Image 1 (cartoon, helix red, strand yellow):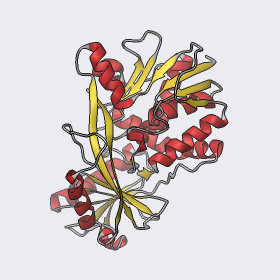
Image 2: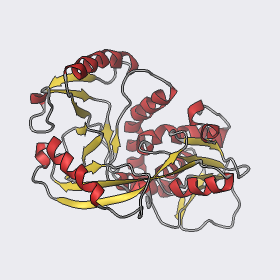
Image 3: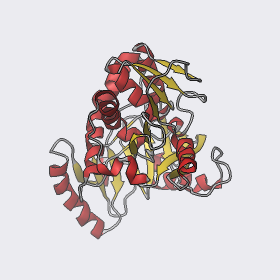
Length: 344
């Protein structure tokens, strides 16, 4: 294949376009709203693994993608000369009680096997990371697999890399016919649901906040389902809500305030830090809750990559490889739970 058109300039579309361009394909990325205009233009950027137990193909793909991320984002930065804000910073989680402490220690053993001895899940005293995260037991989980990036910077870096390889990013498709990939996020799931006459997926609203405080050398934090992510630019991102019912998908409201309060409570270093930005947007959630990858169900000869709900950036390196293998070389290694049929 010499050419590929990608509809959607979010993380899936841009990552797959980059992988295709890297393999010598001339790519055309089409998005009338611009680069990272949807959920991929958020602010959080937490790349975190599943708990190291009850292993399955989905967890393996995510692990492989997180392992690949360091070289993937380094290659993007080198090709385009733009920094995606990536760092394997690790992650801390508080341990609530004695039962949780025993479970965390048991998972440290399973992580040694499932994470191939390359990364660690450890129970450490809270004092090893003074002032970062309060824990009821005085103990924390520290994993060294988690990473972070800056979502908007990552999308911009991918766009720069694609252009450096001769690809184009444009608001409208050219007249020239070529194979197409549809990576159009929540809007694409809504359109597909209408075409199929049944729910295939939907957008789930998320809200997040940005604090002005410089913790760039600290690990990310995870407490009460809340991600607290220090970024390289001297800010800390906090998110996010998950809202099925909403009046306005792009505006923030009072539902964000409890998250801000929770972040200040869990991380003492945020207690007096000002909130400098609030963000809201729709994340695409396929019916199966897993990414939807493969041949497009209603457009013969086209492909789809959608449904990266909460894990799009973490999964992007591996999904780019899987989809490029399928589209460009006809090799199908997509896990069963990621296939289009799983969401139909």
